[in-house]
Image 1: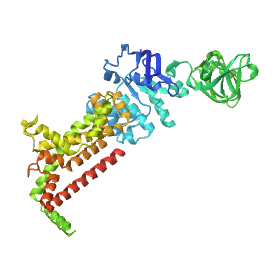
Image 2 (image 1 turned 90 degrees about the vertical axis):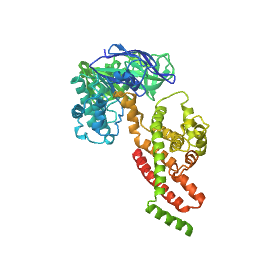
Image 3 (image 1 turned 180 degrees about the horizontal axis):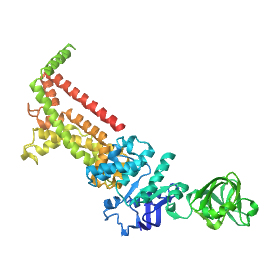
Image 4 (image 1 turned 120 degrees about the vertical axis):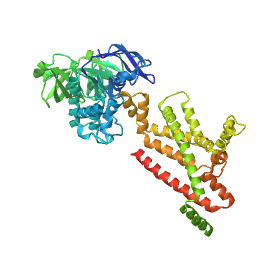
Length: 334
Length: 231
């Protein structure tokens, strides 16, 4: 096991921004997915040994990490963080990638060789003499990855590596992530907002919300208010003419998390045997490792995951009407 | 007006002839100011870095004290240092009074708060991601500090130049601790004050021209570094 986190809590100004237990395997690409403020960056900083938890246990490669006593510099040299918007030193691209090698006392001719190799891996070799602070967002991200690779780490942690890059650079960065994992055996842990991206490149996906590991992916999180009808059934009113059944003791304003695996989708209303349903229109379909991910407009975009073998029978085509059923038991209300 | 123009012409002639007395005064001024700036830079930049990078109890108090020291009059510093290095003072036996060393001590006290405060300001403008990047790439605290100082280098250099500009033009400390001894502790500003008292305006104006030229050069360099820091 690469990381083992037990009851890790990170508290800022009396608020727990992280409160979870987690195990992360070695040699895998792990995607951490969650909305803003879900604790992804805080978690990455703890995993990179740059920030300490308020309480809880952290084990790295089987050894307990004590942020007050353990040699953190040694650990940091094995787990490198590429920040969400990486910043490069105001030197040349070469000097930036050379920096980790220099502080590790690698000989000059060896440094030159490694820097050239790493820049080739990220496709930035022609920028070797360029001023690093003059590069575009995507180019900066790629040089930052080369810089991280220069550390010969066991794990690279990437905070939203494609959040501020164009499509061309996004494809390149995703390819680099896969390559460094498969060809070099480096574990990669990255955060993203994009479930489709996470399922495309990650071996494992962990969903975070409000500092906790959740089953729901962040796509289906909506704010609303709880109302009870004449029969005593509770609904969450997300917007005018859109309400979904929930089981909760809460009242007033809430947030609901709808697990995309726990929704039903039908071509015709007549196919529905029982339960509450909402009509929508399919606006996107994509393949996702043995499942089909459907995005349905029901007034708000709702993601539904359907097993591949069932998809042919139940899934309407893009632009066609769809009927969605909800299981109140599978809807989390916070 | 004629009197001023006559003095100005005579001063230019004095400069043109590279008058020996004038050169001794200018070189001593530059030497004393250089060493006081150097010492303040070597002490002030790391102190500024330490204050800027660490959160500790009393940090605001330290900043307030440093800001107060920025307004410290040179005569107060002169008196303070005099009380230590005069014959009856704690360090009287070292024979520092009326030497260039005494002037340097006083000037360091004058500009050290300037260097520290401006270093703190310079570092506060440096993006926090530089520190995090250096740390995650495996840099130790000294290597991380070096990275941060390097990124703030133009602003820090500007701070040092401001400090140099302050000491080259000060008169109180040089007069009280140097004693204005000819060829030994006489600086441009103390010489100007003396020549003015004597009614010898030619030397005063010549030294004034040199001082203005130095200030002008310092400002050109300062402008250059401030421009670089803003890039």
